[in-house]
Image (cartoon, rainbow, N blue to C red; front, side, top):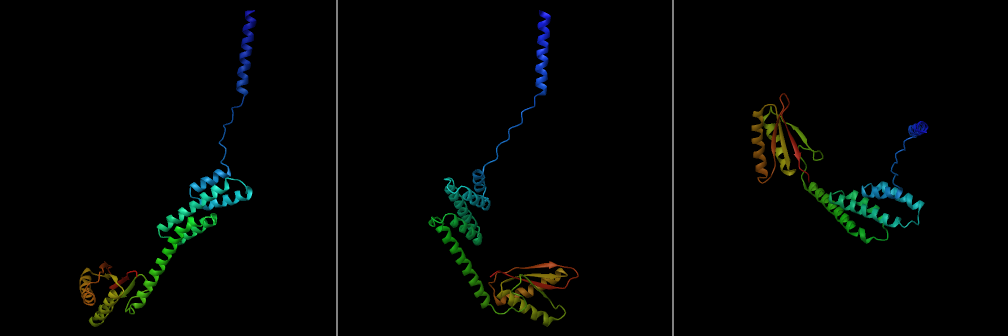
Length: 236
């Protein structure tokens, strides 16, 4: 009986081993992807508002009576409203108005919620308009420029170094534009010694026209290049 029992036990163990080798490992369980409602909430939280608005529109078409729609719509509107306030504080009035219009479209029954931002945007637009009008008036009040072009950021004036009378006349015109257009000046010279003489001559003329003017003059040495002055008008 013992030999038979031993053989039976050996066969049983061998069968269990074969079964274990033939069995396939269990496939790992992957996490289920978030549903459309979760994706919408995630996009609102991450400030992907345009994508969230598209998702909201799709859900409204699919599940018009779902009670989850209204709070999500309000949440998205509040996110747009917050964006409008943030970009307005940064000075981007157009972006603030765009975000505000999206918030209004999402909460048409609660116009009071957007009233504060709307008033701030209107005030910012008025300030911009007033600033532009004031700049235009200042530009119109200025006399015509002598040597610079007021429409560009900087004007280059080559100097006639071979004629004393012509150079003095140029410096008179440059000084007039420096005062009338509040210019800073860069003197481009071939030799450093030229700068000291031209600086002295121009400063004397500007001081005579307006001794209280705050302006700057600097130099740029360009060997082998013609001597010239660069006039940089300050913004209106």
